[in-house]
Length: 283
Length: 283
Image (cartoon, rainbow over all chains, first blue to last red; front, top):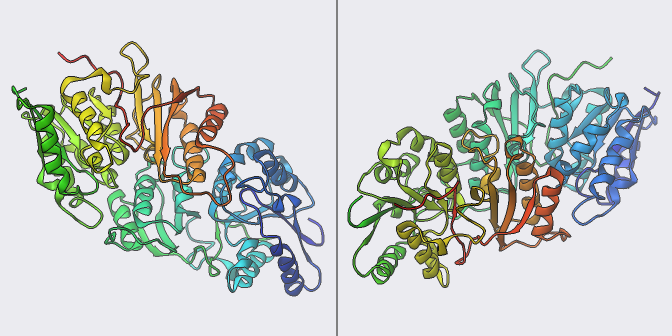
């Protein structure tokens, strides 16, 4: 580790809004005026290839540029969207020992990469805010939380039910986790408290995803599920007749997985950090 | 089997438009004026419980009423929508020997039930039109095709690539098959030609589903994939840059599954019948 804590930002799915870069750098200077933190955006973050921030090879290559570089302490995802499932195999095939000790932070579509890295035994993988959260009203708080987690391992950034003495944890967007069912990328989550959040999906789709997730034998051993925020739910036609929490509790009852209440995560600026496994104390 | 060919209709997901019943009966009288075919709609088809045609127990019970009744030669699904994944376990737990020899026909959300029955060794399961297709312009042709398949086993109703001497087949809606990944309900499709269709989904979602489907080890042994029609695709923002066939061919290339071209199935009146496995010659 260098004297300066160096964070490399890549975009494995959709491209960044260019203005996010300057605003992030401004916030970093404000939060860490001594210059102890440097955030470096890979040029790939701004590339555009149809739906994606560069083609699959380019996005995988950019991830590996930073993950395999000893000069970075953390890889921070710039934005979600869609695309990490298309390049994750190339990432796994290209990781070197330099990638091992770094922290990795993101959420939403990035859940595919977080799952794959955690499944490979990476121990500093976490679900939490990304640079593009600056585009939300009040987003500076989310980005400051992400930075304080990466740089200082700040306990205040953690989802409140996370505890060093408690069970291991993991967090996912519901749609992304449903798409890991039957995949070799799904890590062993036995004994973990699983926190799930959603955005922009009809309740009938959440219901269908949760049927798939809670019905999967590989998840039968989770310690329990907490439900994060489910925002921007389109109106179901006809009315679904159940809230998102009733839907979640229904599938927990049916599957025998304990429902543990709400989690303080979601597609919003209050999104707290959830480590995969147990977050090791920083040296 | 009675002298009259008796078809029982149930709705394991969403409720039927009541007018479909009379119109179906009218069409049956027209197509089979001798009275050799009787179509019986279970009263459950018209029940409404929020999103569903009755609650989960009611829908499973109605299915079992007809599947386990020796007086019916076939169980025909009235409509898709959403809901069969919620009641399929109760169906599997309640099947008796009377259910074994019947034909079962439907598509879309019904794929979950077709998969589960085929996985249990039911040999007369098929993907094809439902009564509610009468609500499409020209839908009488679709319903007549379904009836001629059920009653006469008419070859003219079959998807053109289906052949008694060819490989076994199966067909699914892409979203529904993606939700069977990691599920014990997924049947062994080794050696099968898999035909896939979609309706109303963004291309990025089709891409994500096909990543999951073609990446699943259980499907590595399929003989190949044919792509049915993908209709009512909402505009991707930004443009996805690939057609649905390019997306399908991409995932086939990546997974090593042969892409075999188009299939004559879809959410439309031209939707042909695809047997699960090989359709036995009628006695």
